[in-house]
Length: 298
Image (cartoon, rainbow, N blue to C red; front, side):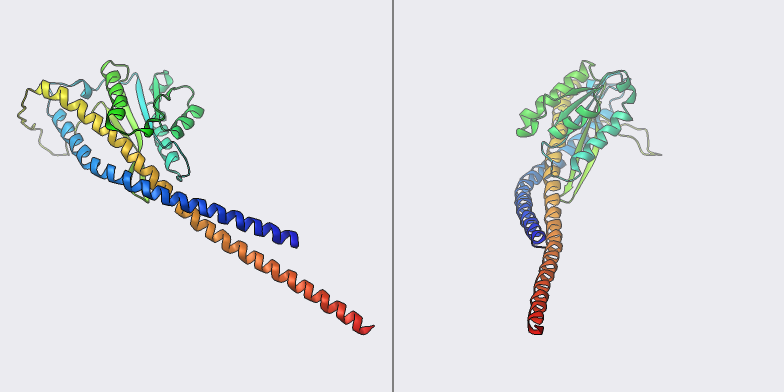
């Protein structure tokens, strides 16, 4: 029984130490989340408005002026960008993003993959580890795994510019991005969005087929050559900021749950320890009483 009590004491000490770590990680994630949340909340309205404006403009250019970033063509070669975190301990966040990306690989791009023309560009170590093990038949790019170390616009724009250049040169016929969309600290959603070609607005049922008459200054061609790449770079930056905030939100929530679970385990262990201790004391008292009774009978 003494050995059992010692084992329980050691387990209690171990759980307390683990709980201290999870509480510290929660506090660190909460501090990082405030900064990351501020960045995406400032960026998202601007990026969403820009994207809506771009899609609206491209939807009204049929037959007039075209941009290479909006050209739809048969998908013979494609790229899926997977944006995950570099570290774990954030619940099912990374797994959900990887599953969403895998669904696109096995669904939308199944034919491209079968021909050996599918590229998976990984940003974040967790996504790279997932696809390296399971999708060896795809071209896995790990050159930008550490991109989260510097989320400045100029640094992120290197990747979006590369994707746009390869789309224009027809190395890729389509580019999709799998990422974690941030809603709040407790809710993040894994999503896959079409990055290239730029998706046009779909008219609602019964909507008039009339086109908007935009006035362009300078000319349409000059404006689109500058505007479209700029908007696409901003949109790609949003994907990373969304994922960055989602990671810290998911980790903060996971560490909070881990701390609560540690409390439950500690409560059960202490009840078990007290019961075992009471049994030991009771047994010792009975032995003493029994010994005393034996001596008195003699």
